[in-house]
Length: 201
Ligand SMILES: [Zn+2]
Image (cartoon, rainbow, N blue to C red):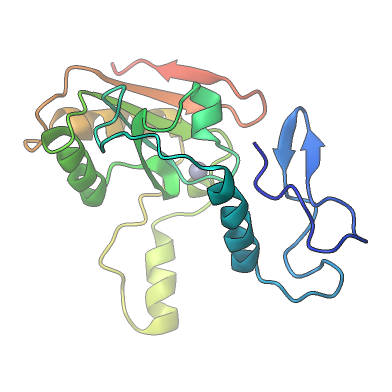
C-alpha cells in the first residue's frame, strides 16, 4: 500500500523509497517534482483520487469490529495498522502528541465505549518520543512569546514507560468509562518495530 506511489511528472523518478521493507516518502519533499509547485495537500488529494478509484464500499457500520480503542502517539514512524495487523473497520484510533490520556482522549474513549461498543483499550507510547525532549517550561515560553498561557498542559514526560503507567491509571480510574478491566499499555520501539508491554504495577 503506497500513498505516494507516482510522481507528478513522467520525467522524474518515483517519489517513494524503500527502507527496511517499508515504503516511505521521506526522500522527496512536496513541491520539488518537475517544477510543479504542488503542496503536500495537493499530493494527498491526488493520492485520494487514486484511492477512491479502487475503493469499494465495505458496507460496515461505525462499530469497530474488534471492539478495541487504541490511544497512541501521533509520531510519523508509528504505522498502527501495519504494526498491529489491523484492517479497515477494526478499531478506533485516538492519537495525539505523546499518546497521553488527556480529557479529550477520555471524551473520545467515552464515546467509543458508550456509543460505539468498544470494550478494550490499548495505550501505545514509543521510544525516542518528542515529548521526552521538552518540559512544562514550554508553556511558559509560549506565554512569553504570545502573551497568553495555553489552557492545556504540555504533558511532557522523561520516561515513556512511566507515562504509559500513568495513562493506564487515568483510563482505569475514569468515572465515564464502562469498561476498564482490559486496559493494556506498551512502548513501541521505532528502531525494531516491536511492542514492549508495560507492567501496570
Ligand atoms: Zn511520540
